[in-house]
View 1 (tube, one colour):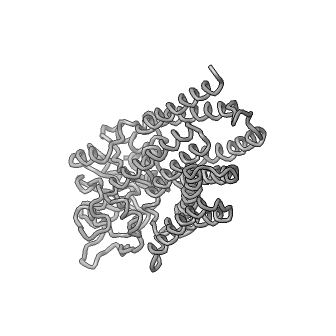
View 2 (spheres, rainbow, N blue to C red; view 1 turned 60 degrees about the vertical axis):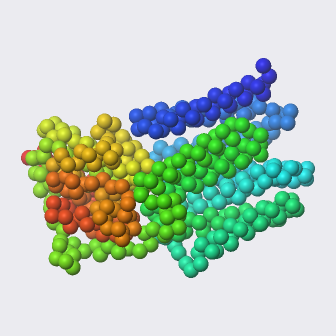
Length: 465
């Protein structure tokens, strides 16, 4: 067996591990193992690449390649280990952008290499698409990071004629690709690079913070396509398979997230959702209704007399890092005979699985994590629904108000429980910027303050009781 054949078989093994890893990531129980399987497959592929001859010759610049790997390890390992769960979406955006940028750089380098050989049109087109899509993904991911990190406003940035301008820039990029195909002009390649970067920025600006996770998933799919294009350019079957897997899984995840939000992808991308804040933030409405507030001690008494309690976590729990105290409260209630489970909305937090990972970090049993549909069927028998930092995902307007921008979004029906308790910092609205009618429901009690601090007081009160 030749060395090339052996390495191709190793690549096939690595590609298989990527498929198995995606399967593992579909369940909280197997997600960690799936991640490790993918990492192992990637290490095997990278090592094998160093022994694969290129055009009949050994690989050049091996020390520089090793230096790049070392730098990547030095940067990535500490970042991945110490990043807070609240910043995980930003980290995903950065990693995605780096992937797109790398694919674009590979395509640019290959263009410099082949332009004098008058390559076939389809070969040049693969390279140029790699530049366009990779740069678009890099620039879009950078703006997504800035929005999530609050380096710029998380609200949609809109201006007159926005979509027309985007269309003109996109058309100019396609015309530039045609120009480069005809002339092999290096200057026009840089023009294409600039247009792709501008298009990526303009595409992301009108998308609000609540929709950015969906956008990141879509950009991830674009990065996969760019990587696959690089695979065709370099003649690497592994890159083609890996890029296709990333592209397909990214598109599937985008579709699932859109469905969980009850909105179409065009609506998410072009509606500037969240640009207008309509919530008053008042504790008393013009119609005379007002919110009812209570103390952590009041809620502790309510929980102590309950037989079944459901916790509904949201981004506020992640911000306060209160997952460990929430588990402590659950353990305490269970020791007193109270049945506890967690109702998890598909897009709770800022990315799919955000709440699952957050609660797993606190060693919450997987069996207590109940998906939205099942949670809704159980809520009618719950004595207390404790909403910790969630807002839009329990807003009845998604069901009752046809004029609401979130109308049609599947929600967790916390209002079905006998009592509803909201832990909120203030009356500020969620990402959608709209009023939550559940706050004014007679069965709802609000406890204002940091979620972790409030939960800690509840734990102390339950113990004292």
